[in-house]
Image (cartoon, rainbow, N blue to C red; front, side, top):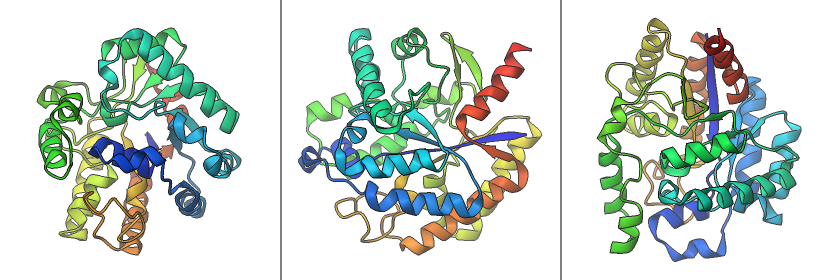
Length: 306
C-alpha cells in the first residue's frame, strides 16, 4: 500500500501568534536553519514528501533560498494558508478566497509551483473553506484529524498561553472537537474534493503523527515506537491508507527555537528528536510505500474513479 508523508512548514512566528505572543509581528524565522536540516534527513532516506507552505513566509526574502532548495530537491508543494490563523474556518467565503489567492501568489512566486493541495492551520476546516477550495481547482484537502482528543489538546495549549478572552474565542475550536472523532479515517470525497485525513489509529481514534509520538517518547522511546507499529499494523489490516504528518519542531530541540519553550517536547535534546524521527520514518517505510501527497492523491483518485 502507498502511504502519504507531509510536513506543515509552520514557522517560529506562527507558533507565537497562535499562543498570543506579540513577538510574532516581527516574523521571526528558523526556516533558513530548519529546511536544510530536514532536507538532509529526507535525502539520506531517499524520501520525497509534501511541504505545506505558509504564504506570509513565501513573501519574505530571508526565506527564499530555503523554499528554492525544497523545489530543487524535488519535493511537492502545498498551501498552508497565508496568515496561518487557526480560526480560518470562521472566515466568510470572500475572506477564504482572498486568503487562498494571496497565499497562492506568494507560494508560486517563491517556488514556481501553483499549489493544488491544502491543509488548514490547526485543522481549521469548514464547508465554506472546502467549497472555495473546489471552486479554485484544488485536488484535495488534508485538514481533518478524526480524533476525539482535540478538546484536551486545546485545553493544554490554553493553559500554556497568554491569550485574552477575545483570542480564546477566536481559537475556541483549535484542534477540533470530540465530534471530529466521527469523521472518516480514510481518503474520501467531500464537497468536490478528495479529503485526505491526517490518519489516526483505526478503532481507538488516537493520533500517531510524529509530534504526538515524540510526546510519548519523552516517557519511553520503546513504547512510542511500539504504539506506532500497532497503528501501522491496524492501518494495513483495515486497508486504511495512512497519511503521516511532520512538524518543524519534530526536528528542533532544546535551545534551537528560542521562544518556543512552552511547546510540548521542546525540553528534549535535538539529536534525540531527530534520531527518533529517523526511527519512526523507517518503521513507516517498512510496511508501506511512502510517497508525497500528490502521489497519494493520484492513487486515491484512481481507486475512487474505479
